[in-house]
Structure formats: structure tokens, C-alpha cells
Length: 370
Image (cartoon, rainbow, N blue to C red; front, side, top):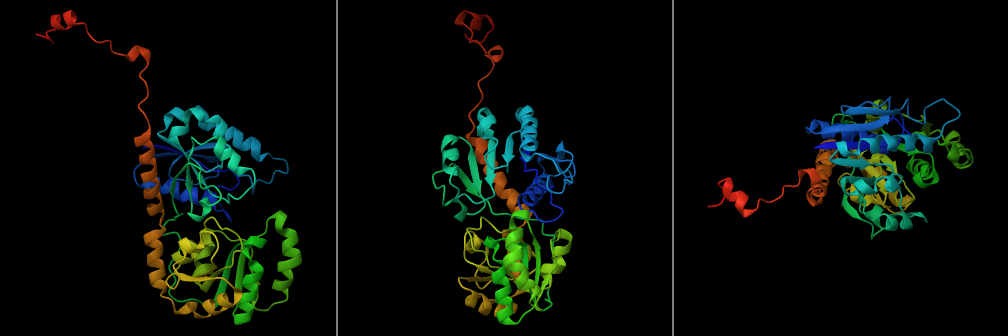
């Protein structure tokens, strides 16, 4: 199968530091190549992939030091490159929300669009009503709730290579928080949980410019004034095995309809249980009492984090391999691709290729009819 993968350009593929969508695209792309398919990745030139790479920008946007840049222009240029080659692919898989819809009407039946973000935004329903011909994939069943009538083809949970993170049998006696410093991720609740448990907390997190006031006003005073809390900043994949594998539990105190939460399966890959507030996709990812605990309050989270070390870390790793490997994700997407191909009507033959039936006399002259 000839497959194009079209990610956003904000982070490289895979990201050097924080980044969800581009990381998933990297794992999916390599997984499809490993399964024997011909995959083309459109992206920045600094991408690392086993697929054929068509570079559409010199580097990913966020770490580009240029002070003047246009993310819209970059994505429009990428879409133009994809459009130019649209006939070369059996499937064009977009991860760019809805920006490609107006340009790919003609090829809608060979496209698939995975939506990676929250969908409870005011302007979204009108877009998916306007372009219902584009098939969509959700990354959790819960993600669909704001758009129940959209053209959903499947839910495919994220996955990543089993070898990417190392299993850790013995934790080092601390709790972990990994993600973004933002109100919806609940870092202040993680600090509260660890403090009430009198347990060290290591926080590895990205601070976006728009979240800097929240960091300065809410989170930083809790970090700087608490000897139990160590803020280590933003980390990359190569640091996560040690960071997550050393934790007794990952705290995931989200306060929003989390579409997926990649860090939960990163922790499971290390054998680390997850203590997570039961919002959005969380009940689909965490198996309560097996790979972690689902909680509703800080008090419940404190109790759960206190007994998380009793869970079987080897079994947690095994559940990750079964449910959330990159190969499992790639195979689920291949099922969706196959369904799209099976439903696609045969193209009409060009006029030059149409065969005119022979008249009976002509047929007899060729010995076809007696």
C-alpha cells in the first residue's frame, strides 16, 4: 500500500523535546514501514524516519530560532506539495486538523484525518458539517462526544515502539509529573498530592509562553517553597526511561477532557503505574487496579499513590505491549485504510480505454460466435 503521512510542522518528527502529535506520527510511520508498506512522510527536513521523506521546511517551527516565521504559510506550502502528488498514493493520512479540507475535495475518499486535540470548540461543528465527506479517526471514544454526528471511521489509540522505553523493575521512591505546565494538566494538584503523602515529586514539564503567567503566579511558588519538589524542566525521549522508570507512580491530575494522554502509556512502557483523574480518555487507557488507579479527588489520589507501589510492574509493561505498541497501532490503522480502499468506487475508464462491443457480424468474422 502507498501511504502518505502528513503531520503538523510545529515539532520535528519525532519531537526533540515535548510534543505529542508529531511523536505519534513518527511511530506510526515507522510501524507501517516495518509492516512492509511504502510510506512517504511530508515534514521538516530535520525529521528522522524510515519512510521516504519529502522535506517541506528546513526545520520544525518551534525550535526554529528565526524571530519572524509564519506557521500558516509553512502548512500551506506543505499542503501544496501533498496536492501535487495526491495521485501517487492509495491513502493520504492527515494529522493537521481540518486545514486540508477545502483543497482535497476531489481526493476525499482516499484521505483519512486523525484528530489529535479537543473538539469542544465553538467553531468546529460547522466545519465538520460543511465537509462531511472526509473520514475521521478519533484517538479515544470520549474525544468524539462534542461531535457525535461527524464522519467517524474508527477510534485508534496511540502506540509507540516497545523498545523505546526500558522496563524498570525497582522504582527509586519518588512520584513523577510529566507534561505541560498549564491549568488543564493540574501540576498544582500533583504538588498537593505529593506533599500530603510526604513523598518526593519530580516534575519534567514544558512551559509555553501563554502559560508563563500561570507558572509565575500559581506553580512556581509551590515548587520553590517545597523541599519535596524538584523541577527538572523539559525532557526528551532519551531521558524518559530513567525519569519515568524511577517513579513509584506517574501523577496525571488532569482537569479537562484529555483526548488521549500519551504520557500515560509512556509510563506503562517503563512498568510505572498511573494515578489519573478520570477525565476524558483516561478510563479507556488506565485499567483501574491493574495499570494504575482512577480517582476523582485529591484525597483519592493521595491514597492511590500511596499504594501504587503494590501493583505488578511487569504486568503493567505486558499490558502496554499488548495494547499500546506501535505495531498494534499500525495494524489498527491498516484495518481502517483497507476499509477505505474497499469502499472506494472503481474509477471510470478514460474514453480512449473504453472497449466498444463487437457487432455480431464482426464477432463471427473473428470466430467468437458460431
